[in-house]
Image 1 (cartoon, rainbow, N blue to C red):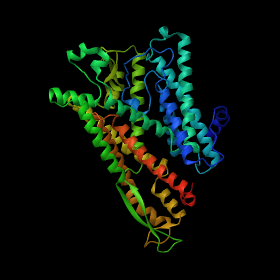
Image 2: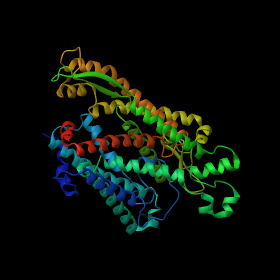
Image 3: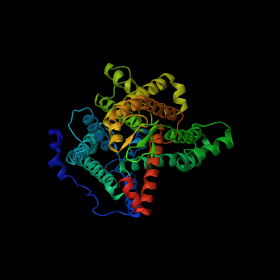
Length: 479
């Protein structure tokens, strides 16, 4: 029987729009089409401005938006944040046993999906209201009731559309996950713009501003030409380009590092195989959790600071602990103290040199949280030694030289899985932090996510193509 908590969402879930699973076999080319269509719709929404919101170049959340595929002042103001947050909260509650849910039961799984959708819409509304109340779009008096309602409805509608696009891709019409697809698109967009954006002084400030000096370019290519053609010194954007390439290569290498345990099939004597335990055993999920947590600390700290009348840094004990903020001459807001400051990544080498203690604190906190979230997800995601041992036994596999039982398999897996999980989580946090320190395009977390997603899509495309060309192979892979 499903848990009482999830049963509450059953009638509410029926009201929300839903994408039905295909009742026929969807061809490989058709899946490519629907995946591409979902991506195009999402990218268009990232460029459509919100009605009633004045365009502004200032963005307090800047690099944090890359992870949640959001864009300032557009329909994708919230991005995939509410969907990811809702899913993570429910999964953690189920993993901790607070919510009773058997994911192997189709009824429970359906209720869990309905609850995730309701939570997503609810969190979209809560975040939209919080953005409005924070003064991000202007004071409440300046906006007026009509504009406030319009902004709220636009953000909720956009959140529902993103949720449906994700369903479209996940339920068999497309390939992979819509959320992963949107994250990858956001990171790719950020990297592309960082590399190829035009010369800032010529296209924004005009020739006079360009000749006057200052910051004459945005993109790395323009910076490279300017720097090595005029000053023969290294500018941060050039360092960011080098760091981006290096991090991509490092993460690709880490994806292939694994420990392989010898296995054999009980039903086919002499047929042997290997069970791989990857170094990045829980993938990049820990850094997503940590980044989501840090982003919420930063956002709600700034929200409370706005409500308190923006006190001067160092004058309020509460904000000295939670996070002190400061408004720059340009109008942008940044954390300058407290927890919010410690969990904010320095996004270039000069920031690290300016405050090395903050950089070290950020790296330490990120690494510790990634290791902790790795261990949590080990049980929540069903990746623990006991569950893996049961899965291997159910599939007819055993370890050569040991009797056919779950216990010896579990004991051997316990030697590797917990150690690899913690080590992989710490390594992911360390790479993400160093990438941010060097100014890598798309942020270190974004690069980690994009490489993992590209790798998953590569495996998925190869499997789909093989199943399309050889229908008998589809029975082997269980599709």
